[in-house]
Each structure stands twice: as C-alpha cells, then as structure tokens.
Length: 83
Length: 443
Image (tube, rainbow over all chains, first blue to last red; front, side, top):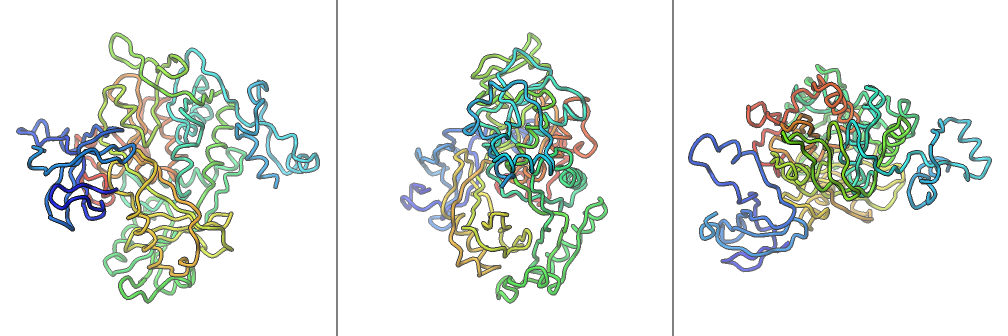
C-alpha cells in the first residue's frame, strides 16, 4: 500500500504508523466513553482512519481507504479533516 | 495412500453424485476398512457427510461452517442430544479461516480467564481422533517459545507456573535444554542471543482440513444439516425484536436460536442485527516453503520479534508472524510484513534462508479490544455470539465448539468460558494477556 501524504506526497505505507478508525469522537461526558473506547463499526468497504507519518513529516493524516481492496480513496491532514 | 483417498472423497469435485446418495450411513474407519478398500482399488469410499438442502426451520441455526461452527454442531448433537441443527456456510466448509491458519495447538496462556479454556481445548484435542473416529493428524510434537532477555525468562517462568497451576504442562529450559531440542538455532546472535525457553511438550500441530471434515462427519451422521453456498443476508425478528431465524441466499430459515460463528466477519453479521462489537478485522499472513526433509522438530517461536514456525507432515515449513496492523477484509497482506516475518526467521534460524517460499496467503482475524474471544449471548433474544478469536482460533476449535454448544443448549456459560462475556468491556473485566489496552492491532 502507498499513502498519499498531503505534505510529502505518495509514500510507502511502511513509513506510517496506524492508529485506527477515525470515526469515534471523544465524547464530552462519561456516558459515551464505552462506545468511544471499545465499539467499532469495522466496515467492509470505505473507512476513514488515522495514520501518523512517523518516518516523514510527522503529521497525522486522515486517510480514506477501502478495507476490501486496500484502494486509497483520499487523504488530508487530520486537523483539516476535523477528525 | 488410503488416508489420502479418504480425505479426497468428501471434496465436492470428486463426488458429483453425493446428493443422490441419501440417507448416508457412516462407515466406521478401522484397519479392516482400510485393508478392504486397499484390496478393492480404493474405489468404494463413500462421501462422509451430507451436503444438505436447507429445511424450513431448526431448533438451532449456526452461521458459519468453519471449525468452530461445525464443532458446535457436533457437540450439540453428541453431548446435548440436539439434532435439529443446521450449519449455514456461505462458501464451502472449511474454506475460510479454518483453511488459512498455521495449524498450531497449545495451551500456554497465563490469565485465569484464558488458561482453563485452552487447557480444556488441549484435552479435547488429545482425544479428538478417537472421539471422531477420524484421523485429524494431531501431533503433540511440542511448542517451544524462545527467550532472549532476563526479563523475558522471568515472564516465561511466571507463565509456566500459571500453566502448571491450571493443570497444563510446561518446562522452563536453559540454553542447553533448548540446544538439545533445536541445535540449529542461532544461539550467539549479537542482538537477540537465545537464553532459554519455555516448552510445552503436549502442544503441537493438527491437520486443519481434517478437523473440519471430522467434525462435519460426526455432526452430519447425528442428523445435523450442513448447508453450503448459503449466505446469511439478514435476521428474521418477531414483534418483540427477538431473533427467530435468518434470511439467506437460499430463502428464509426459521430457528429457535441463531448462533454466530463467523470470526473474521463477525462485525458484518452482527451489523445485520444492529449490533456493534468491540472488534476490528485485521489480516494475518502465513507462509509455506517448498517441502524439505524433516528439520524442525516441533513448533518454535522467536520471542524477540514475532515469528513462529513448524514443519508440516508434507515437509513444508509453515510460518508466520505479526498481523499487518490495519483494518482489512482483503484476505491478503502487504510486503512490509512479509519482509518482517522473513527477517524474524533469519534471526533465529539462518538455515531457512536457503529454502524457497512456495506460497503465502492472508486470513481475516477478529481482533478484539483485549485480545481474548467472546462466547456469550448477544443481548438480543435468540442470538448468540462466538467471535473475537484474534489470530488464535484454530487451537480453540474443540473447546469453542464444546462451550458454545453448552451455552446454546443450557443458556448458561460453560465454566471454562464463563469470562468470555460480551459485556466485559463495559464492566472492566478485560482479559488482556499482553496488557496492550484497547488497541486491537497491538494484541
């Protein structure tokens, strides 16, 4: 897999550290924490996820990727994505 | 030779007339039956399980015709006398993770929630072939985990003590002890010297396909319907929201209880019932080399990286390492992990560098948030969950079937699987062998 880093360009996925599903949002109160920490939609198909470009520009990237085909569908800085 | 014929005869390709031969009478395998078939040119072996069309309804419908689903059906029939059971498989039985694992069996866990379960599984493995009258090629050739630091040796001593307290076998080996078992290892590796290891002599390997076929034969013979090419597409519910059956590619099937055993795809099936699970799907790659003369005595694992290897009876070196680490349903992985696994292998046994890789493949593992499985009610009436086997489902096959059948038949958890609750993530009773926290790709 190759990931298109918005700063560095397309790089081998080996340069990145995987954080996981970008979907869950940190809740404001305690009630939502179980869902946030433990439950995942785990889709077969497009997923939004966080990768960290550890061996590059060291920024967090929000990547859209297909989990069935591993096709890259787009990427942005995580901060711009609001993720 | 006769063994091979016995196995081949239930591959659908070889048995175009299987459906016309009903009802099936199970032939008991014995020395006499082998001799009789050898003398008659191996032409009279019969299919050993029925490829059944689905009926209108069953007491219990099991989704997933892998090892766990078929073992569940077998023990429902054999232990609990429940035979109005169907196993629904979207492809062919054993065509998913049951055919993609590295066939290792062991019970070298540490935590109280895990070790009694895996030791129960080990005991069932030890009697499996007599129980099923089927050659599953269970081979207790030993599992050796190497250690490369003092801290790791301390951790292994603790784990070995935990195993022995739960009735399993474990011996802590010093470097001479390891040398006696596997003299070919690179003991003087500058970065990862081998200081010793923990050995479980009762661990080993089994033939994955034969496990599936053996359970299928035992279940089918007791009246269980094995329905292939039957994909579940939704759940039938009553007005109260209870699950009362499944919608499939071969029509609706009603059921008293519906049991999921679809590890790898648990989230997808659960989503049809609006259930979210504490699971991510990840790809685990495995590899096999060309066939070599016997060289690896048992199962050996590298403790400083992540690499494990055994040698199949056919001679291929079967090995693997870490999951790729990103969510995937692709059943194939990427090159960085191929490289990492091969580096791990070369670090402990440089001799395998001369062997050529024959093939590699990927299987999809249900990675849970604590690295341990789930055998429980779903919270929805009528729906039961067997999921989250991470990359360790094969060794669990007999006990998973036994405990899931117990839960389905009695509505109470089996004592060895009582901690595999779905709500443990909410209540904080996690079973986290590696202490990694809620990060599935690190377990």
